[in-house]
Structures are given as structure tokens and as C-alpha cells.
Image: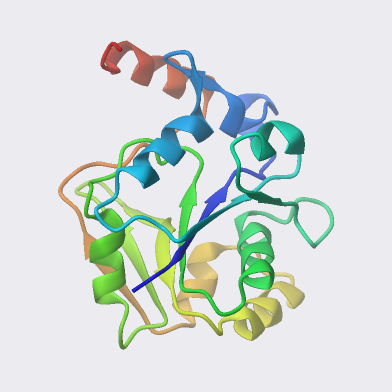
Length: 193
């Protein structure tokens, strides 16, 4: 199954002091570069990659992929980035991941896509938690998402609760970098080179 990857890098990163999270450096490279590398290493790589961003658009565009600002005002959250991706690729199966998805199992995309038939959305979990922003979704969900957003709702978890949804468990924990301290702590453990 071919798919388009959509990387979310459009948030305000309030817990990181308002810096552009995707451009925060880990081991000398921006988080977005690590995420793009993780996608390139997939056993089933994406046909296309889109980057949802609202700041530093030229820096993101330098990676050679389409950059999509939110089509909704006032940074309404990750669902606005997802909506922009749906609008740009309305017929595509999307693989959604945040810009801090630095290390993914090589079969990450393949396993989510394999579980997608019969579901509208499939998300990932690890031994510690569910990751609702790591997901694969069928095309055709834009009306549902627009309706949800027009009600003033913003939660990925809330939107998923109204869909046919399943979860794929992974043994490997996924990074969840919410603060600059989280990045520095991971950097201490990051392999050299």
C-alpha cells in the first residue's frame, strides 16, 4: 500500500519555551532531519513526504518536501496540521508522525498499514503509553475532521474516539520530547556518529 507521510512540525512548542521544535538540534542535527532519516529507513518507505509547519518555512522546505502551513488561524493544534495534509493529499493514505519521531522500528509503517484495512485509523502504542499522534489513516476522513474542528474541539484523542480505530503495539518505546531538558537527556544517550 502506498502512502504519504505527514510530519507535524507546526506547533508553538510552549513547553520548549516557544522555539521551533522541529529545528531543535539533537547531536548536531535538527529533530526534523532525524525524523526524515527514520522515514527513509522504513522497509516500506513513503511515496511522498509533507511537512506541516507554521514558522521557518524556508528552512523546512530546504529538506526537499512540500511544507504546509495550517489553513486554520491561531495554531489550533496538531489536527490543523493533519487537516492541511488531508487538503494537500485528499486521496492518500496518510502516515502521521510528530517531528520528534526520531527512532522508528524499520517495520513501523508496514505494521500500521497492514492493520489499516477494516479501520479508519490505526495508531501506535509502546509499553509505556499510547501515542495518538503516531498513526495511519484512510483517505476520506477530511469531512469528519472538519466537523470535529468546527465544533471547537482540538484533541486527537477526542477525534479518534469517534472513528473506527485500532492500536498496534510496539515493543520499542517512542521518543516524546516535550521540553529542551528532554532533548538534552536523550542527547546524553544518543549514539555517537
